[in-house]
Length: 205
Image (cartoon, rainbow, N blue to C red; front, side, top):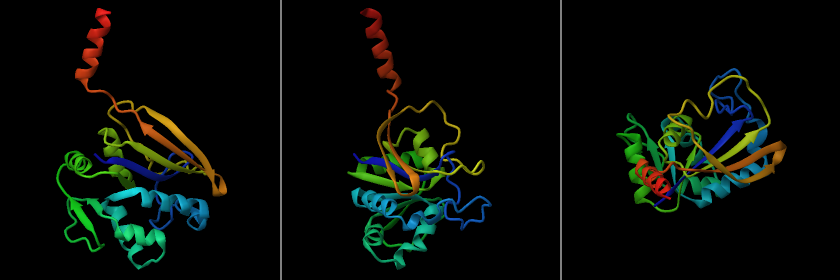
């Protein structure tokens, strides 16, 4: 079974909207010059090399597909060669090589994909998709690159959730320009049947 890993660039107050400033958001562009920083680039390459496939929402897919096929270098070569699963109900003919459209119920289809594949499935950006995956208990690891800026407005990584989602911090490091890299494992809730069994055992002890 594959592990689903989320890799996100976020601000200190949890915003993810328009990091490069190309979407017209008035507070966009907070990603700044980080694309040229060696520490960030190294982590992006490490994520891609560990992945067996990419999982993307449509908007993120289209953004990447318009840029990466024409680029060169180790990261571009890896992203271009990886299988890419794009969650969309409307996309018909993806033109980025090795792209497969995932239609239907997102939770069911991603659960099937997680069962069918091995290794890491890397989800980049795609915050609407990320919210669904986290709320459905399908995410195994969260890798956050936290930029030292507060926007005060915009789309946050986490929206409202159906329940509390506990996480365990497993690694921290600092890279260029004061960006904190935080890695969390998600602690999956046990099925109700398991909790009931444990409760019964405890009452008999």
